[in-house]
Length: 313
Image (cartoon, rainbow, N blue to C red; front, side):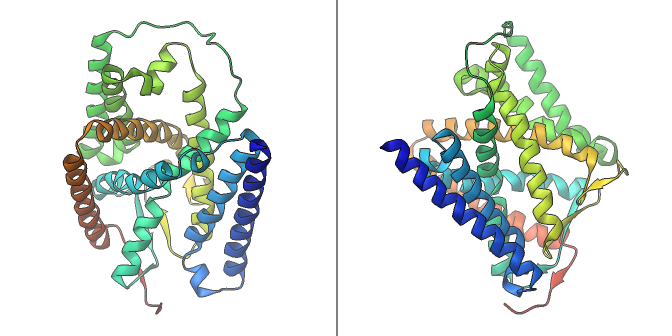
């Protein structure tokens, strides 16, 4: 009975997702301004429903069905998480935004909703990829985790973030690996059960492999939906100059894999911090992150946005 109910809800979700994607592409083709200007958000709404419903149908579970509240929390946390990279981009100058609406409230709400999709998308992709990977006992040899390795990894993570800030044109790709090199050793010390890297070193490669696949999967759809949008980002990276898949040079898709790993590292690290914090500390965290988001939104308007749309909404 439970499986039947899950299948039905999954089928309804898939149908709603297909309808949402059809509405997005149909509105784009017919030049419906409200849909065309916010195509990316319409498309991602449809994608999320289709992915979540597909996970329910195929595997009997999904991030939303497992924890609706957790998914909403993840979406909220996703905003400051991506804004950390927007902050780095003030120095890197690797991407810029074009055609954003002039009204500040609409533009900032668009920032928030767009960036709220990042972590939930990686989670949906992880569920999907993991569902196809074989289950069973670890077959890879275990490796001892030595404490000095953890310190070395964190030092490398700091270096991965510092070098691009000093020489952005040369070292900019390193930012997509710095965070997990810092956070994973912290998780391995405090709560190794939360660490995908700890499980990888213990021979359980399923979680890490699923994250790598999720990064590529989500990266493809991020670039696909952005390519057709009138409000979009464009890349200004100094290299590589090779052929592109949508707006992204093909070699750039490699970066989505370590990005997915650090998304999971951040998610687990943040969840650990919140679970151990008092209610007053959580409120302080929320207020601080909200102020951080507003400050970065304002800085993006001055630094990262290339052009605004004069259309009235």
